[in-house]
Length: 291
Image (cartoon, rainbow, N blue to C red; front, side):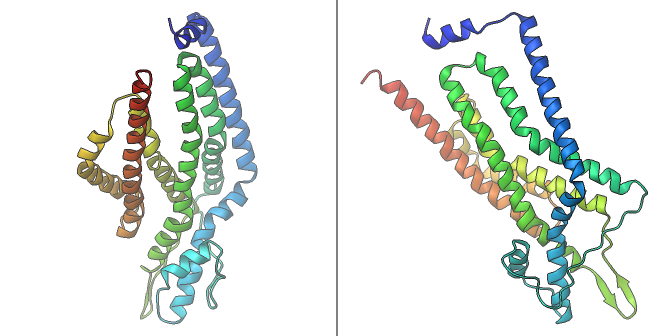
């Protein structure tokens, strides 16, 4: 029996002990979620203001451009959203969202609090999951699993950042450009707070999950389910699947779909190299004893 196998054997416990441990870790996860929920709900108004900032930037750039008979510059929009450029002269910084039901704003705050609680409590949930499954893993598997606990939230934040600083302002800028004001006829964008926040949270969730592609494929590579050669051979089908996913999870405009499809294709290529690196390390480890 190897040293790793003896460690796993020593960590064996009766089923009831596993259930008790699972219950304890679930309680910790629930407590972390509840505390994060109340914290986010307390600051729900401030969180909403932060999430509305991209809409404010799009509205300001569009208003300034409309005053000169245009629609605005995309680069200026992204720089204003990132705070690298002030709101242009003639732009209206005020944004008015509406609530059409008495409790709509309350439910919107609860939705924001729930979404924020998942994000804040994720490190605790992921750590409790790791601590529960770690005794059943070999030492090298534990070492391989830990980096993904860091990579997953980092990639999620990258996806969320792409939504906040690029996708949202472009989507709202595109929506504002569809308004009609001509000959006494006006078609104005009157956005509901609940629908806007649903758009924000769904886009952040979609991009954050899609950006987990390298994590998922690398774990599958470690498990031996996929190989770099297999992923390279099905690259064309993967690109088609990426385009389909981008068309489903983003608003129906080509800019939004490209903003998701292009990073996903790049992440797929990165995933191939990650799996290839794992295969190289595995082959090196197998040949080293013979040497």
